[in-house]
Amino acid sequence: MENIPLWYGLLLFFALGACIGSFYNVIVYRMPRGISLINPPSHCPLCKKRIPIYYNLPIVGWLWLRGKSACCKQPISVIYPIGETLCGLLGALALFSTNYDIPMKAPIANWVDALAMFWLLLGMYPVCAVDIKHKLIPDSISVGGIVAGLILSMFPGGITPFESLLGAFGAGGGLWLLGFVASKILKKEAMGFGDVKLLAGYGALMGLNGAVEVLILAAFLGIVVIVPCAKIMEKKGKSDGSGQFPFGPFLAVAAPVIYLWGERLLDLYVQLVIGE
Image 1 (tube, rainbow, N blue to C red):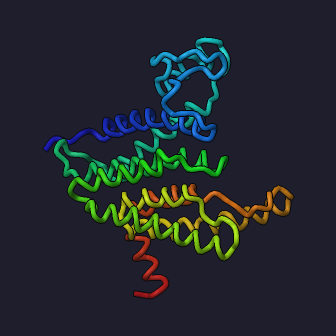
Image 2 (cartoon, rainbow, N blue to C red):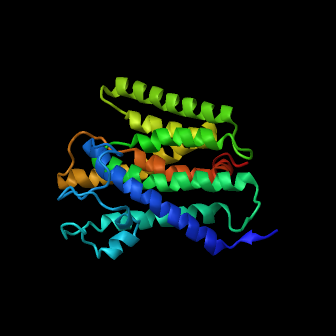
Image 3 (cartoon, rainbow, N blue to C red):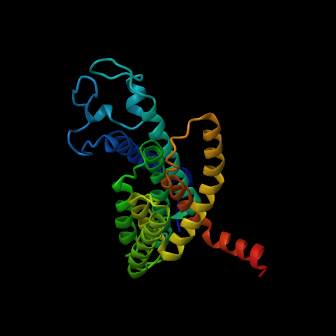
């Protein structure tokens, strides 16, 4: 059976990832400002002229224009090509982490794994970029994850549509209930609804058990990072006193880790803690 060369598959996923990254740049800029993702079309933020599609090519367009807009010659932030390159690399990593060699007629489960990892890895960029700065999570990623999970569950080799729905409602509903109870106890908002929808999306992609493992790992990462950061900020007098930290980035980082190594990590935990 003839195989697709690895370099060709990686290049294809890099290009696809860079294209998605270009759209994610739009999300990162427009979503916190309440601007529609569709209308108006891509335009120069300074002179408002519409940007031709050939200047919008990911990475290439910025290099072609040498980092300056074609209309008014003002500098274009280097953040745009960096985001596109990052998403391209994450796209290639999604393929590499799930399929080292892909036959021309590979089992559909291989492609489902690659596409699920593609979604999980690329989703880290807008979730982290927006949630850290604005404490918001784009619906296009959270709700989009639910839709992506339901679609991928219809193909053989992964979880079933029922398991996908159970994962979405169980994980999302469970986290909402946990946040509701915590809010009543602490008498302040303990969990944003964006986090609830994001975990629901992960539940749709990897089932209820996978989503629970994502939540546990994210909570562990949050403790490891947030506690020392809070102490440092308090010492420097930079704490706003709200005690609120974005949880979405920890969920976004934990999700692909669990998707790839969830079972291994669970086995390792059982061996270390229970001794079996």
